[in-house]
Image (cartoon, rainbow, N blue to C red; front, side):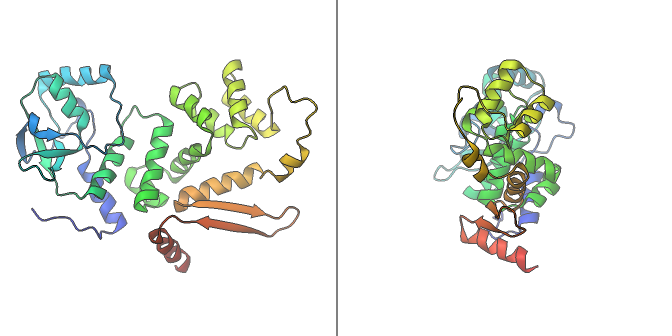
Length: 298
């Protein structure tokens, strides 16, 4: 089988990888793909770099029951396991593989691809993003990985993944929240709407605790964030100087949108009372710098 080249165009490459990733829930797939072969289940191994390590037992059991009745409808995507002839490593479909073990299958259908390590990780991230049970923080982290690790632009992700640009931008902005607030979002204590309102707050963690304790609506949370609500217990403190140096909500939001769009950290420093300022773009690799130069020269 002819190997894929590493120097692939972003648009065509991402679209091609997307075509290989099928819905995780094989029991509801309408158009099963034809497998290349059937492989003994013990010759298939999980991807050690799989970004998602958590598999809900109840959902695995439900899928295992479906596989007992209907078999594995959608084959796994695998690649030859390096250094182990006749063995394969899962690229996409580890959940089906685990459920098949629970269903005591001896063989499983696979589609073989000659992916390199970079493409394996890329496909694994794409597959995870498509999962219905991802929390907003996990989904946002997936988009950010695709932009940071592989240089995919927000516009290209929007086009290929079928999501609006604003949807992706707003999710990625959630990653700027403190770890405590992201934890509330993961656990379902806060909704995505609540979290978005907290991004521009002076103290998002304190306000999040207040929102949860009082059961505030998203609209009420937005009003508190705009007022710059601070936790009680700081009587006598004079935060005027500190808040004077804080960036306004519009500037923070613009920084988040630009960072999500470029896949790089963007900092805006606007001179108070003037129309001038400075934009700083930080890049992690020379590839990101090249991509930025190409965009600016168009």
